[in-house]
Length: 416
Image (cartoon, rainbow, N blue to C red; front, side, top):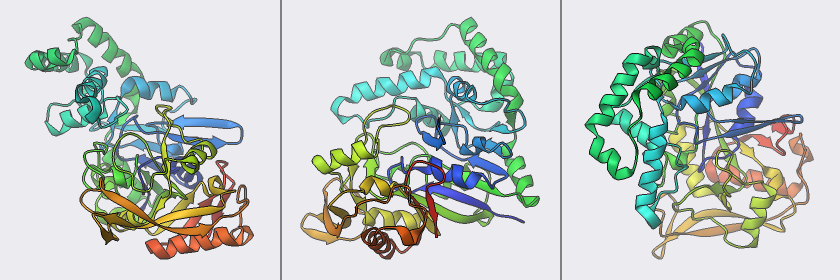
């Protein structure tokens, strides 16, 4: 029986997973999304065309691949339908798990209200409703895609939920929907999405048994994982490789090669600790050169240097076989390039990710920069100092940089 290969982010998200999934998806039979919601985004550039994907797996750009949204995802029907509109005829190519949880407009209102109440202590969420939707799931009061097949019954369940939590919704300023309007909304979703709702667990199992080539993709990155990230400044799902099992109905023996995605530098969106963040001109230059603005929100990303300590941590948690190093070209023209090799925590040198990164100060090693890597497609043609940088990173994190991206274009990719 075949095994499913996995793509996982190794930093704070926005590592460039979309390009690599798109690159690898050209040879896949199935591409499966296992976690997250529409708060995440992949930007994929193919020639002159730019696609922004938030929920639909990146394999959608391969006309021969089937795409699965697994049970570990929280799905906003209205946003998913908008995303579907980018593509022609997805019948037989797009499948939604009947066990994936629904993210409805009131979840976003709750999310925004909670962030507002926290004031300066806000987590910095996208306000898309991801946390409240996962919260309902864990509290066992959520609703799943399969329920959308009976809009009348689902409407009654949601109205009961509002009735039972009337005081709570009132405090947050979330109005109870009108029953007839809610029913009409759910019926509209049903008309478009019902043909795509299936038991995706059985679909994936059958694909494995038939020795189909399967690629699994997550969302966000390891340092935003609900358990292993910089809690509480994290997302609400399991972003690491183990999440692919629970999010699709697989067991660990079903997983094949794990490719971890990392930028040649580091970024973060939202609040929370970021030891290697650069607050000066170089950080701003990284943001400008890398076009570091959120695919989903458009807000500027915080930028800094490669964090080898956090990377080694992520490689171990995910069982990474190879790293895809993204955006090497963004570092073109820097006289020096820094790497965080340890933290100073209360006067002590720490070479692992501690319980709390809030007080961790970076200890850097500096490398000589290079002129130009943009568009290079052969490792031997890279500038010597760029090769030295890559080889040093490999030694620090203990994993080969098997894929190196030198521009957003699909073809500008070095395979080693």
